[in-house]
Amino acid sequence: MAFSVAVAGASGYAGGELLRILASHPELEVRTVTAHANAGERLLRVHPHLASYADLVLEPTTAEVLSGHDVVFLALPHGASGAISAELGEDTLVIDCGADHRLEREEDWAEYYGGDFFGSWAYGLPELELSESTVKQRSNLAGVSRVAVPGCNVTAITLALAPALHRGLVHAADLTAVLAVGPSGAGKKAAVSLLGSELIGSANPYAVTGGHRHNPEVRQNLRRAGGAEVTLAFTPVLVPMARGILATTTARLADGVDAAALRAAYEESYGAERFVQLLPEDEWPRTGDVTGSNRASIGIGIDERAGRFVAVAAIDNLGKGTAGAAVQSANIALGLEESLGLPLDGVAP
Image (cartoon, rainbow, N blue to C red; front, side, top):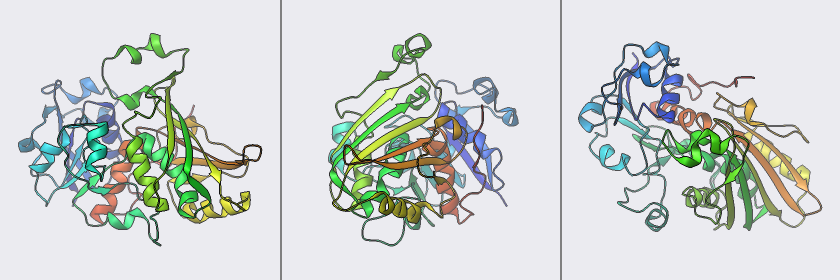
């Protein structure tokens, strides 16, 4: 029998992508969708592309409406998940796509978000290697009732750098990441910086001096992978593509490390992973190849002139970066096949 599902924040981009993926999931049945300003409207009016949900109407986002489901996906603004999830029973699997339960350190939350700190949940990045461990993060997801989905930028940077840090092949104190990011990562909100006339024909950096809210989460993940504090220069750049992230990351090589050692490390880490694709030597990922999929595509190499390792990762920020990761984590938590209902292929052109 299928698990009953509610999606809170269903009117947004992340909520809409969750619904698109769940529409073809054989074991998860969406019965309730909620919103804030759009409550009372037909879902199809907000998401005309989701034709299979023609009968659903958006209800108010309250704990009362969400209660009674087997699985609740929260695709809410940051700061809105904590109070609602606290009212849902432990017999409900709650998957939070926001930031409210990602960070382990309260001081990081206070510095980058502010407001009440609701503590950390099991972290929804199954492929993350853990320091001084032979298992990955997926081992901490089986059977849990609370999961925090990573930030989209965080997923791209983490998957690009974690294997090298985990094996001590690069220095943790000198990391860089420059990301080309589609504006859907900012959510469905009105802002001058997100207008087509501001984006089309332009690339616009933001949160340049370390102020992006995903910064402490990236450092947390890389600390988990390598066992040491990291220093990271992280610069996101808005570019005129609706969805997608291309993360170009670099790190200073440890003594004696060569290209063969790095490729062996990444093959060991990702060779058996369905949703992480390591490209052949001298091939580099493109965002268009992963659009609509739950796949991360990664290319690696060495800049010999600079003595630096280079790893480039491409993901769909709404797919592997949010909704795909949420469903993948739900599958693990429920004891289902991890890849169930998740798209491996992208959409082209």
